[in-house]
Length: 100
View 1: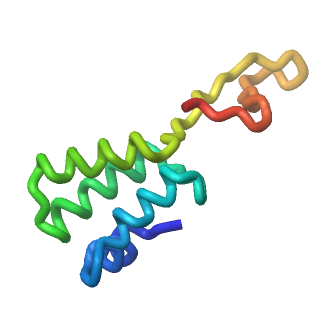
View 2: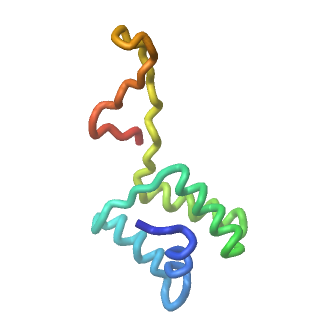
View 3: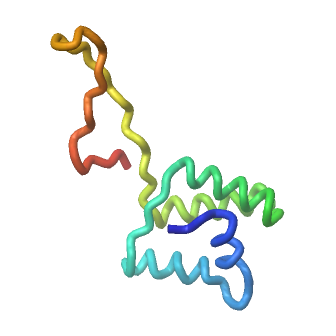
C-alpha cells in the first residue's frame, strides 16, 4: 500500500525511477496493482501541488496507472423496505463482487 505524499516522494526521487520499475513489474504480473477513483484523484492532486507537475504530465501519469491497475469502483448501496422492522434497510452486496 502506498501513501500518496511520502511514498510518491520516494518513488519519484533519484536514483532511478522506482515508479517505472513498479509499473513494469505490475505489467509482468509480479503483483497485482489495485487503485480507486478516490486514490487516483488524490494522487493527481499531490503530483500537481507537492511535485509541481503540469496538468498534462499528471493526466498522462494517471492514465498510465489506470491502464496498469485494476480501478475499483464502489458498488451502489441499495435499500429495500423491511416487512419485519417496517423501515428501510441496506441490501448487502454479493460477496467478492467488484465493479471494475
